[in-house]
Length: 278
Length: 266
Image 1 (cartoon, one colour):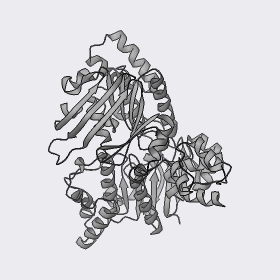
Image 2 (cartoon, rainbow over the protein chains, first blue to last red):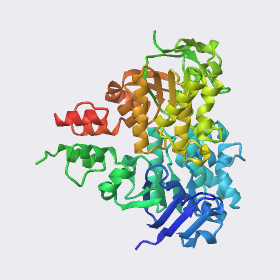
Image 3 (cartoon, chains in turn purple, blue):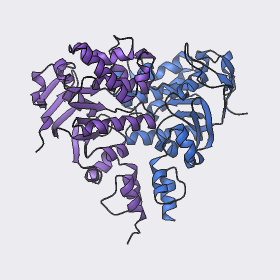
Image 4 (tube, rainbow over the protein chains, first blue to last red):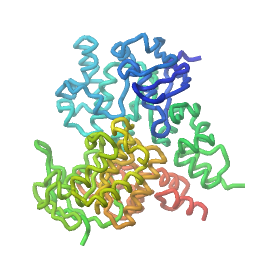
């Protein structure tokens, strides 16, 4: 068994003054080094899952937490978010909410995290250079964060997290603001981080992308986990087809009445559509 | 006469470079649904802001549904153009969904009966029925996006501009969006959809404009745009998944699922 990085045990969570829980009965064990894709319709609880793993729920948002969320061996109730942020980084859905607003240059913004944690200046400089380079914003180093486009801002937000050298990355739709080229570049960065052993939990609506990248997918609906497993297993389940939707390839195979298990990726799909039906 | 026309439009942000290279951007759009695609920084959002007068060109002419934009205030443009920002939080400020959606037609001083009809239809079309009294900021990002779209539709504009409407939307939501823009298009409205979501373009937008580095690289039927590999490469666009699949198995060009299935069955 790989040592778990993120563990949810019977977790339920309700935001302050919310009439009901945003997530309920969450049991999830994510091993160190796994790359897990999280998907599901609006209000499935995907972003809440990220906030819980980061500890922002309940430390920042208040509300009521049941059960235990343990990340890198420490339960969320027992650790402040600022301490958590040494090892765990959360990329917000809207990159605008991520930036500090306190820095006037892109490179200063990337340095903000390590500075807050008292990292030595020479080390900060090295980390900032590396992080900006990795996400491709070195040329923007002297710009004001608020002058950046949505896509550039999203890259800046990711660079700010990487400068902390996190062990666990929680990414809430990390490429929502990016064009295809930018998206491909960021996913390449994430693939590299995954290979270097970083644990990644990634919320994503584009099911085709999830199936290509993530060996494991967690499908959520109305605050609960509906399915958890390999992409082909998850998207061949009837209940997932009905309530979460399908990758284009799987939906086409279904419409064409191809036999199960239906393909979830382009390569498998091409093979399935080429094979004459007996 | 086209419904939207831009003629040699030049624009630059303060201290920035030219968004549209000399001799400027020239483009004509007819009614119906048009996708505006291209890489980050290609000038897509800038174009939409020029159409409503939120940004003013240094030179060139812009006409939208019979209005000379240079002679029209932003407030007056709002009577004709329903606009949604990429980020709904740039747009929402009222305390309930209903108030937010009502704001547009109310300040445009539409007759009460028209306001009521427009608001009710917009709320229904955007799947917000039952959420009228919710505070927009208690909704998730994708639902806030729908509130922004409903707000743009409530004044029953003849031109609708949607900036990245599918961002963060789940499958049912994307289907609703597809039905909505196709209906608006069939009603003879001018619908301009700025997007990186090529699956959506193939499903919902019969016409596509490709911008690259501020220049129009293509304007015409969507199916031809996705058939031109050199164009896609140059503009940094990936074709719809279904187009890739059709190519992989040697079927003729398809841009949406219905086309694919019909071609494959043949």
